[in-house]
Length: 134
Image (cartoon, rainbow, N blue to C red):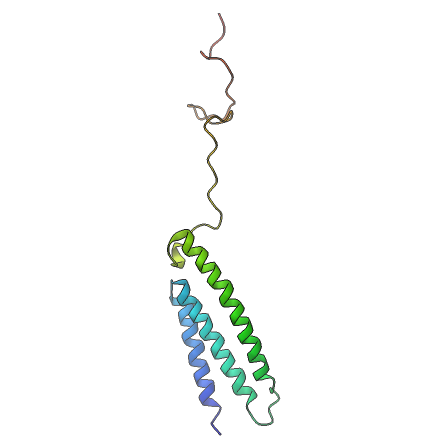
């Protein structure tokens, strides 16, 4: 039987690398890989805790199946968001992410309330000349 500190040390290494990947990377795909490393470390620790003889944590392998299921769902959602980000910005750089809201459409040129040359939004009236009638 192996000592429990070896898998626990490997799990700590995986979690440390994953946290570094999440905090230090700007590429969305590499951040996703970092999250997966953290989940792999957690799964390894659950398996290790559940493999001890006479362990009160015998549910470790079952909980690992839940972690794998959640990780699969997380990958699907994250890749969909990354694909949308790439379609909008042609980049997966997280620091250059576009605004979440689409830009507001410009008002039509023939709007009755569009700004005049003086900058006021007063509605235009019909007729030309702009003065009093003689």
